[in-house]
Picture 1 (tube, rainbow, N blue to C red):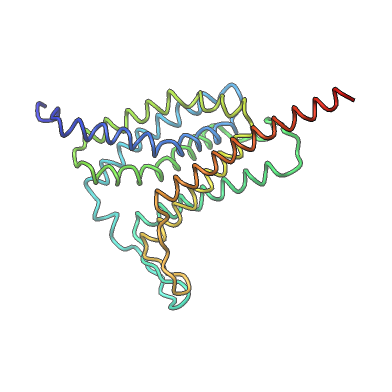
Picture 2: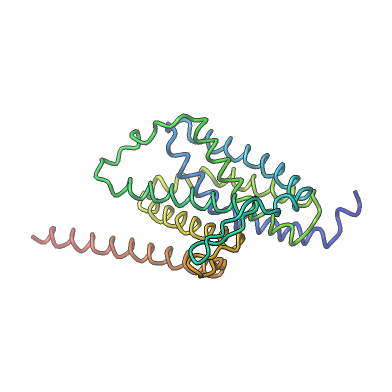
Length: 262
């Protein structure tokens, strides 16, 4: 037990907790948006159980990945349609690609739902069964975990250190989930920003899946979107949203003032 608490291991643990926190942000966003489909009084419970089950699955996945990493990297099938599509898929690439497509689909569906002219009635969306919502929260969480676990394995090979980091990450998500959800309900316009961030996450995962499977479309290699590009676009999205909302308030004040004068 003594050799677990070395300085090197503690440094690794702090690095991993930071990694879990950063990679957990888009995950938390998905959980929050998905939990809003449940009836109001059950939303907090859906978030809590979604995160708890997801953490359990993460630790199981970590154990499997550590012991069966070769199995995840063995080629399952390949496409060889020369000049159109060429790719070699392993389990890792399939999971990441499926996750990316699913998140992109979810974000697009919600964006189109927002643009349709139905009234802003939460109840219209609250028709999904609780089990169904929790299932998708856990499934998407596993897709996000692949990334964080493989990044973690680049830092350390110690199962206990990674498991503790996952538990701390899960605890942070439980603590923050209600706050994020309340913020989004009070500031409904930020839901749009949240959905576009999810859209961006989907694009990033699809590009990563394409890169992992060495995919070539019409002779062009699929390149993975770098994390730097991802965070840069994210930063621009957030800043433009803040500027937009401040400008909107200013315009509303000017409009109210001119009406007052008349």
